[in-house]
Length: 92
Image (cartoon, rainbow, N blue to C red):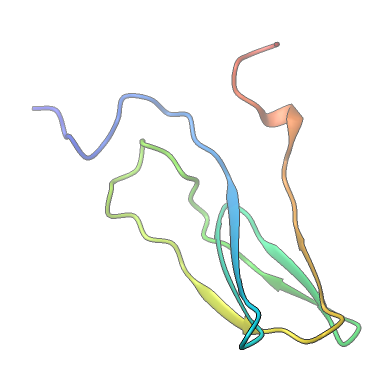
């Protein structure tokens, strides 16, 4: 019997997602094989995402960690990508 919670394809993606509450200066972050880099008070803080990509390969019940952090004026936030070399579709 086929498990309907899983798919027959194994493509996935990495993703970092942020939400900013400007009224309360709260940044929320969730990452799928992606981290957030925050420079605050001349210090580098790394918020690591979960070590699982977004894919139909994984069970529907998969959850990602949501992290909240208080931000301050002058903070710098970076999200990165493995970018173009890791795209789907073969050589093209």
